[in-house]
Length: 128
Image 1 (spheres, rainbow, N blue to C red):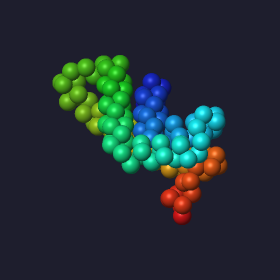
Image 2: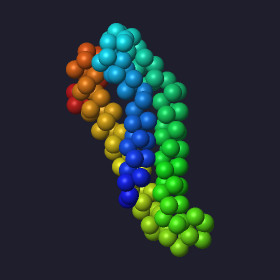
Image 3: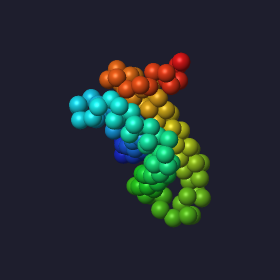
């Protein structure tokens, strides 16, 4: 995978965490109280917004894959059929890395930072 696709994968993983990232950032910079940030995080995480973020993440990553394959000269359906193994493997790898990146960033890194800044996430942490 080239450097451009890694940017799309990383961006897609961060986009998927936007239900929790704003709360942590707002508290870190003193722009919101802990209770306000916790309420915002709960609203974004448990509401329909999370599913919109997942859909946007899939579209974002799909567009990144489209640009990646177009840059490789895979532009038509016949090209895709001819390079089927490469397209399938790259797509599966990109989606897998995006999901793993999302899980690590959201449920480990943001969770630890959120707990450190005072958000009430320790009880719900996956390691408890």
